[in-house]
Image 1: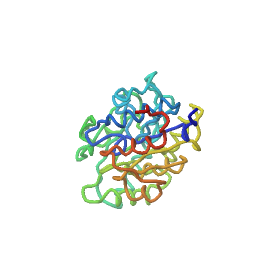
Image 2: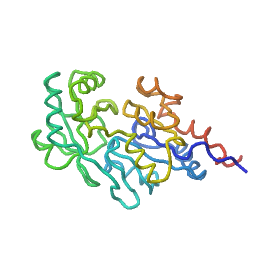
Image 3: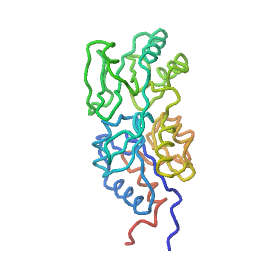
Image 4: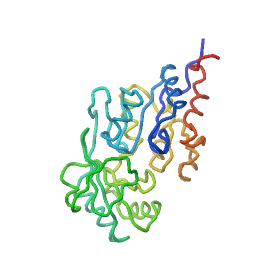
Length: 274
């Protein structure tokens, strides 16, 4: 009889990790995830994307369970098409945080993800979407960003690097919000204390799973809390140096089936014999 799997929970980031650059998932990776399920383990998507931008990808994966969205601000039930849990970023605090950042670095350009399963992504004049495949609605002025409850604010600066902008934001924002960097051109403000780890812990607890039996895959600094929470953290070859520095191992890139490479080793008993 085959030994039980070492990990009962597989947590994967999306962009730069599970997804290739064209927003697709390779057949090899899909097969590896199917074998994880066959071994009795659970796969959870843990992403910075808000729930409305994750639903089509969950459909493509055949996921009917939970997903952690919005940098941990949302736990989404794909089967019921509803949020089991969500927390919003106070809009007055968000405006104050933006003011503090701009006092240090000059003008920044902002976007917001609205709360809810049908929330929109709103972008102010001057903001360029880092991921052109994600839908967004352009508003006329910054005040229009705050018309509905939001889960996070996305920031860009025309001359500062992502690392420079994130470092400055952390230095001046303090307890107003949590600052993360989740991808090229993607520095974000989310509710204070909310991270991928807090959302993943909630989802795992709902499923009766624990950090001690979790393996996590990621590529950016916003995955650092998830790596600290999980028993084993795997960085992609294309990952940010900060994440590679704390990873338990580094796999191949998202374009080269990096997740499948590791899952094929961790779940060999679920492979059909040739």
